[in-house]
Length: 511
Ligand code: C2O
Ligand code: CU
Ligand code: CU
Image 1 (tube, rainbow, N blue to C red):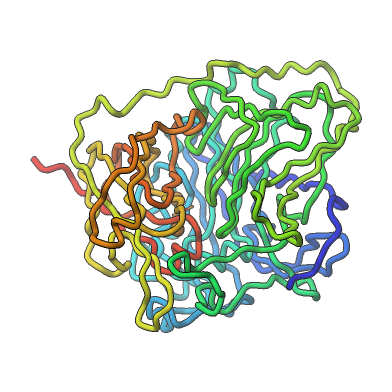
Image 2: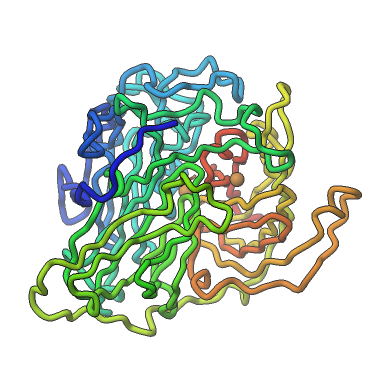
């Protein structure tokens, strides 16, 4: 349906690093303005209307040190109407202003007033504000370890549209320990924000009126709201290329797509050396030929081009044996090893990277069994829910401050969901398969095998966990050091908006 575009004709843009408006010993202060702009996303495509932080798509990279106090005023300077179709039938949200925004720093340990609660939205110049927190300037203490985080819009009911329009950017926290490892840095450390888009002939972005229209002939029970674009965009360019030197590079990869997951591999047959996950460095480097990356997830990898001088290498997405022949999303990015080596490659791939203390020795305060279910709304349209509850149902997940909890995500839908929990970085305990047919018949959970430990590259800090169909996925986390209102949700943005999101309230400790 969309336009076909020639691959690998534009070079990969690198987002600029945002400069603070003010920097003192005590804090860095930024003002970031969301603006509508037109940007050329491919050589042969007319400029595309996008929304960008600082008028840039993707947004500029925010690069901070651990412990650096950052305050950001996120200003909405967007028009009052959306350029993408707003589905007014959902959530009974038709009375809300059509364009509303609120910025969330994904993966960050922040106070609730600065977390970007979905109902803490506001319009241009704060003319109207949602029912929640009315804080204009957000505070980030950056106490957590070095990590690749990202910021993106999180406004109630239209997150999928605002992120698709372009409201996303990378946020990097750096720490001393990581610096001492001698990983590739400077021009050899490159952020990759991968997204899928569909373009109309005039260069505009295509997005359907209702991504959950049942006329999309998906068989029940795999019927679900979703959006899959036919074109891959990396750092804001369609299928770009990157010229590299024959040396080691570090890529901080973020999947900022709405629904699409990728199975990344290199067509040279070489491996990735994965050094980090959502919450920073792993304990040990993991060598992998293929890496799955679901929406919202970050993987930090080193790729060594030393033996490939003069070669062209593709970063590919394995679509599996059932891919349609016309599906072009198997290509992502082209590396051309054409630059001459400037100086020696001092970058190392250490085997041991960091300490990851295990949470299982903590006192477990609560174990929650939470079902991921698919159902239909009052118009018989597919709807996905967490534990059979809608957003507005009373809050049920109320961990106590300082508590360590285990959440068992029981997926009784026909497909996998990347589940994200705000405030915390968690650890994955295990996944145990059960008989979904049996469950559908009589509601019984009958295990079909033993619990499986997480994959080696999942044994670090995570803020999104892949919860596969017909499995119980268990994660463990500690809720601290803030009390207040947060959320947890599926990070497929069409699921999140069509009700796969629930409040999370951290309550004070009982005395
Ligand atoms: Cu990246 Cu609540 O989201
Ligand atoms: Cu988040
Ligand atoms: Cu989902």
